[in-house]
Length: 399
Ligand code: GDP
Image (cartoon, rainbow, N blue to C red):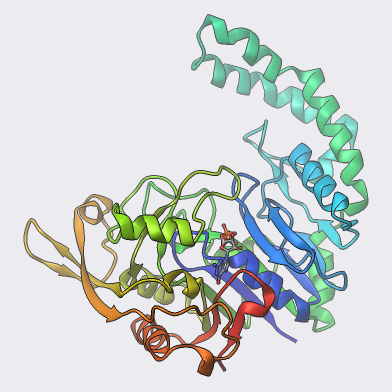
């Protein structure tokens, strides 16, 4: 009956995968709307512990269809490897479909999945694209790299590998737009699954420290192939503290024992890369910026349990520019200004109790409820879900 976009409200890795896995029980269709296999979601459920890179997080519900939207960048051999991994865990992925998504692994100009189904057309497109790619990479390599580049851009090798992957993917390839259209027509419950978060949006994020797509709800319409007016609700996924991967301003970043505690307790290491994430206190300015941009109907707050051990918990409620004393309550448009801002903190007492067994709002310690209520007031959107662990049962539905 409704279409809900699930959107990352910070720098990514908020736990969108776990939220979609939880909500997909009540969904007919889950559409992944952006990103490629360079990032990933981790989902923990009764079937096991899974790292998904391309496949939507609704895949574990046999009654839920899952679609890779046209906004997704597909590396076919990587997708086949992911399907093999799921098959080994007992999932045949018969509920996975691939719309007209594009591949830019070898050809930055994009080859659509449908062309992978037509070997002659694919070879033609590849032959037309490769000389340009060779010219592009030739500028980077020295003589020693020439052989490696020649091998990596060998036309026959690429065509064989990709067409073989194409054959394996053939049963999953559909006209995505028609599938989405019929689902809307039937009034099905649809979830749109995002990747990364607002602060990495190509237009609205911290340029140039951004991704190549739009994680915000506008990108959901575009990347899922669904009219914007059909999105009924937008659920922002917000982590109870801050993490980021890669460079760029991060005012509340901690490089001390508190940051180390967040990283260890929160297992803040990349799903695909294993790289340690930058960690810090909750940044209410960044989340408020995201709320204004994305217009969340509600917020799912994740990883509250990671804060269980702290005596004092800090919230970044504003920024201060030490060069002129100016206080900022919004994210500055200028990245160089943002880079020099320091956080202004408000401190709350910690609860120092284990919340992982809490199953209802009233089970949470009073100080934890106060913290969530404070975040809600600062965000200006209702926090309807609070998660206290990665398992499905560890989701508290507040209202
Ligand atoms: P996504 O890309 O937004 O889906 O996020 P990731 O999968 O990169 O990171 C979220 C990680 O946090 C995953 O390993 C989840 O299993 C884990 N996780 C999600 N929710 C919770 C929670 O409430 N508590 C704890 N401790 N871990 C969580």
